[in-house]
Amino acid sequence: MAENNDRRKTRASLAGGGTAGALGLAQGGAAAGSAAAPRVLPSSAPSDRHKNLAAARLKRKTFTGDADETRAELQAVARGMETGLDDPLKRGALGEHVTAPKSGTTSTESDPKKGAGTEKPGEGTVAATLQGEREGEVVAKLEETDQVDPFSVREHGLLCKLRNGHSLGVFATDFADDGRHVASCSFDASVNVWDVDTQRVRRKYRGHTAAVTSVRFIPTEGNERLATASEDGTVRVWDKRSAKTLFTFQGQFATAARCVRWFPSGKHIVACSDDANIIVWDAEAAVLTADDPTQTMDDITVARLFEAPYTPEGHRGSVRALEVAIDGRTMYTGGADGCIRQWRVDLLGGRIALRRKIDDAKGEIMQVTCNPDGSLFASACSDSAVRVYSSRTGACLHTLTEHAG
Image (cartoon, rainbow, N blue to C red; front, side):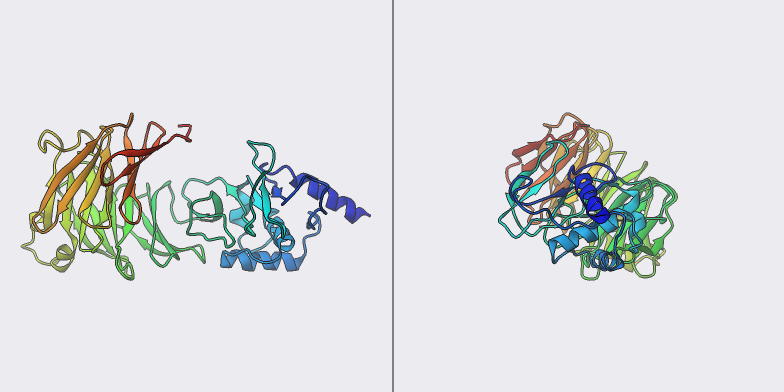
């Protein structure tokens, strides 16, 4: 009898989904009472079997199988059981929803803003959502699907936090192509490459003397190099395995370097800075001739755009956003002047020509990114909006305004 009462209390505490520190369950189908309540693990008596299953499945990043059993596993994790990953999970604020449809055709999802479940097609989904992060932590996120994948970020579920690698806030991250390693750079001037499976730092890259603002793996097989930009005004290319600097691009930015990107071939890189300079370098030649004392920065500089009016088409003020499309011939920049510029790049001829200027934003451009095939690009702006554009016409297709600030 006591155990039955405990089960009822547990169901009641979990029915309200979305409260911090409690795991909300959305139950499939009709209203309460029309179907038997799912089997729920009592909060006072989580079994070792469920804790072990939770640990194993968290390590695989996969929750599959019986929905009731998986609920119990998730509850064990949520209550901070010793699963091997409990510390990262306990420290987040447990939030929004866990969906675990029955065998029917619909499921419901609890939403604390709506206060009630809303129907959607059932997909056998089980997803744990955790919120909150701390300074100096790298966060891997999940998507809501039948398998919980740490390398997808459509949903704001927290898989794990990568801790104790940086002493100050993390500025930027980049995943390697293997989906297992993630690079991070920090205000503490450090760069780390983490193993997401073990949640440990694999390699540390040290050499910058100020905050590292951008990091990118080379987009070639094996991701054997990294590029970083820093507020010390330099851009570095690193060997991934040895963590040694292969070349330092320096002396051409008068202020902080803000962003660095590889061209798809992996032979060239481009960086931008607070002094509105945008420079393309031959990174392959720079590394090959790094020990040549006669080499100068001009020898490896392919093209350079200066601040307006020195380059009439250039930006006015800091350039913070930079992206290179998959074709290797199209580049996007954005900055403090609130404008996005689309450039046509000729690496062989060493020329960068302005294709179009877009100035419909009402604030600074913080980031620009392209979709995989390069047909669309999107901007993040300090006016709280995300805008999606056609790469072919430059027309704004969507303005997304869900952010509050």
